[in-house]
Length: 279
Image: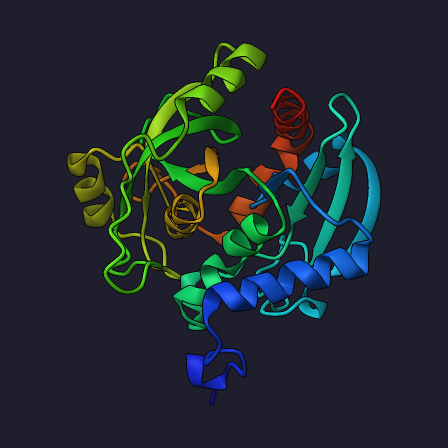
């Protein structure tokens, strides 16, 4: 019999999350030799190849060696942090290959720790990527879509206490314009995050569509909220890996997500790298 981990199992749960992020930033600086980073990237399903196209890798370290980070729990996610000097701009990118999902049961603080760490490490911008289900039948698997707004359907928030953070224009128009300058054919849409790990029912997908969603998945919105609180400018990009339940004529599977990511990998990795090089 397995049990779901809780925040009580986390030895860092009693530490203020921003103090923990500051410690993580110090760990990154010490272990990479890079005092400050400029841009952070979270590479979700299908997006991992972009890191190799950004420029020179200055350092790569196991994420669980950094305060507050854990090993990835999902196949297809990379468990390292990389410092990369972007060739065209000379900026330093912090590539967060280790993402914690809400459904892992480790608590919201763990989910957004990467965002707070990125800000503490000096980053002013973050690119959030994911693999997701699409509600638009015209978006075939392998289609990248810019996120222009979101629906947080997780029934939780990473913000604690009476801190009222404005989420207007959460996903930066300026950064979306840069993305369009790289590929003017990019579509935009609203991303809805469910808790997971089960896929959404057809009725839930229909509900999300009525509420205005074009994309459904299990990540990103909580990270975006925490990134805004930390002062980061945000670009969100989804990879449609499958049509959502009720729209797709076949049952959903994680293997399908991985296969779609692999197939689209070279193309979307080049797209993401070219966007990052203009930021």
